[in-house]
Length: 367
Image (tube, rainbow, N blue to C red):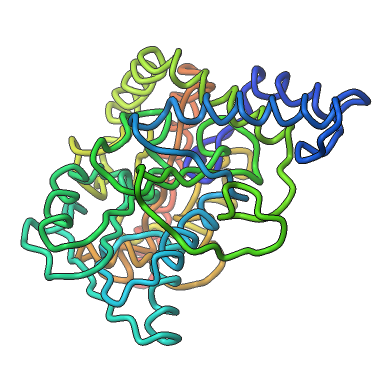
């Protein structure tokens, strides 16, 4: 059973269907070619662009990228800021990029601390050029007050960049952000495509040069199939917004009723309830995952998997290295069956309890 929706979501059947036409004999043309087949492919790209734009506020444009990592790099490096403020629990696509800018160009980076609940501290932001805070954290699901943070950024003379990868298609986009990055495969679309939304009037320098595609900001041939799948997934999120949210809330209540002996990481209320990050002191997560190989859940971010380091997100909350390493992340959403979900959680709980009994028995033997 798949319980790792923060790493990626299943491809929606409607998105797959939208892609198939552009993978066949009549749809393989380059969308930048001037002939009839090329123009048809270009039209499909523009339809998808409008569908994706429906996730964002009015008054901006959508630039297609290879994913959110490229979108975030374009937004940060394309502004060439001298002073940058980021939250302590940003994705590596933001943190590593701003740190590299500090090394390469001397940009000053201010790290905004978070509370034990995972929310950016309510304090003034020092004057700077760019503020980067994600909407929904990928590891613990906390929802940041991005509208208020944007106002503080603007008061500090900065533009506001929001990594909305985990929130797009699930909750409303921040209405006053200047740049928003999203990824298709986190909202039931295909991998290999994402987008950067730019508010009208925001200018960037390109990172990739060549053919001048995407308004000169991102050269390279677009895939009509990936664009069509992204667009269909975005449109489906808009139409299923309410029912998807209600389904997730039901699953959240099921999980909280079953996993009563676990400690929740992050704010219990100010969060996306499709993300359940829990810890159990002394838990051997690697053993738990080995004992439950048919259940696909996570020990943290897929991007940092195998690093051996404790999660920078969990340690930023004040957790010890041992507590961070005894945490798991369970992600669920549109295609999660409630009955199967409940059975999976019971198995996770039973396997963790068996570890507790095993540790107790070892202690008795030593005594």
